[in-house]
Image 1 (spheres, rainbow, N blue to C red):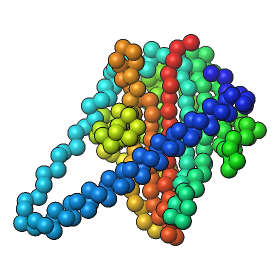
Image 2: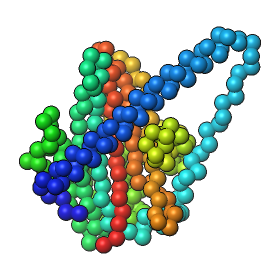
Image 3: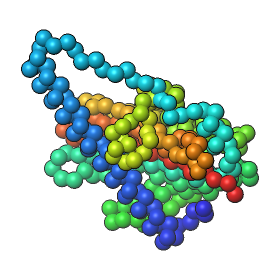
Image 4: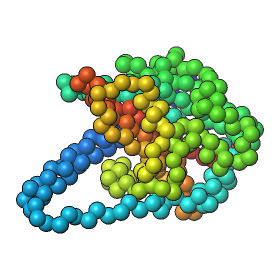
Length: 259
């Protein structure tokens, strides 16, 4: 992949952003509705049968879809990777459709064997009127992703540095399978049980009225041979400020390949 500000790339980027935004927004809206219905159902049961014993809640099982040895072997067999990183904010005051603002949108193609990359900032390309390729800015990989890959021994080490530098730094093996997200998007996704630093990164120094909640997760891709590895990381933080509900998201995707 050669990243250049041409019309074909612009169309692909616009389509990708639209699809990602639609899927995440749909999942969040449906998850909110499911949580609300669960709360209402739980309250009704409590009121209707106060003497009944409490329902046993199944324990959260540590993620069983991620195998580090298998993942490292699969990722290390590649020499190149395409990376997409999107940070966005949605503001919803319930008077109209949510207002979406993209705060960061980076693309990079890295050749680890050659220690070279083509990295660009597309944040200013996304406008209210669509996509303007005049806003493409070529930047360094280090500035876009927060670390240097030049000393990486293999792609598995690169993967680990990238996910941690992106704020998804919790234990990959300590995660719970997200059945709702699978139903909504078809992804095999796991939600971290521990906090990730991306939550604090998204909030920054924001002074909010109420922190509604946050979650961090990753999705697995599968090779033709059936080997699985994490390829997409997503974080969501929801809060209210002055009567407006905000949702901030982080999306990082990696696509590994050989030259």
